[in-house]
Length: 414
Image (cartoon, rainbow, N blue to C red; front, side, top):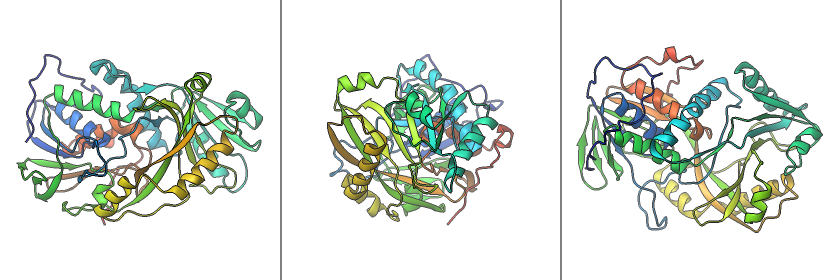
């Protein structure tokens, strides 16, 4: 098992908006999954006064040699935004964004970059519902945003070439986050609140007892399974949610440092290209410095991609570095949308995305002693602070109906 760190005087952030127990109950929660949702859930449970063990491997240094579960948050950039096609997703994001600064200050990490975000799509025609949905949600949520039409879009954001029949919403609050640093900030806060970290993965679960890949055995009072796509592909868990896990490719287009300076005001963007269907939007992030010291514009989004149905497929996919055919398609889209930006090189990478049957995260205690917190639907990184809070409340048997969401985030089991 992991070492329990010495508690510093600083006890970490406490979310005063979360209902607090009258006294620490000291239930022992095993949170399986050191990704964004799992780490957030562990952090909130620890702040509520519970004993928490957060289980999951460190980021692998050698993908080809690594034998454990991978994670898509091992990246430098994710879009953050209040703009959304669904009001609950907007609320999850806005409540998370409200707490970014608190986490940054508490651990001295800067992960939030407020460059603004643009959502854009056709104003008329078969794909117009895409634009109508995010404009409607922006009005319902009373987001501070600008609506741009036709040539106004490219005039405002000259890095993009957008058709004249498009409409866009621009939100100042949006931008991008570094998911590695956000997860690290939440984990440091969890440790400051008394959580243990076990850098291994689960090989077997029996009730509220888990056996790790190391052979160690841990028993708790309650298990939270927050393993992303592995919730649907791993065979160690008693419960399997109804989710589809897709192999996705992303493209990183390198730009020079000089070019990066000329693009300092570029927002993150979600765009439905001309002729695309409703679910074929692409996302583009502004130049971000990656661990190799170079700057890359990232694009993702595919018309279709293979389903991942078991751990062997998942492992093979993450080691593959992505699909070259999908990468070519994304590069073509990028060059069409940003024809005036010179790219120095194009590389690709692999990630995975999980879609639930509800289109929202599964946050539910589904059996005695086991709670599911999973199902990112390609939109959860920015919202993980709030998703983890709801997961912690659910696992601790606190009612989340009072939190003001349209959904109850129920899980659908396979």
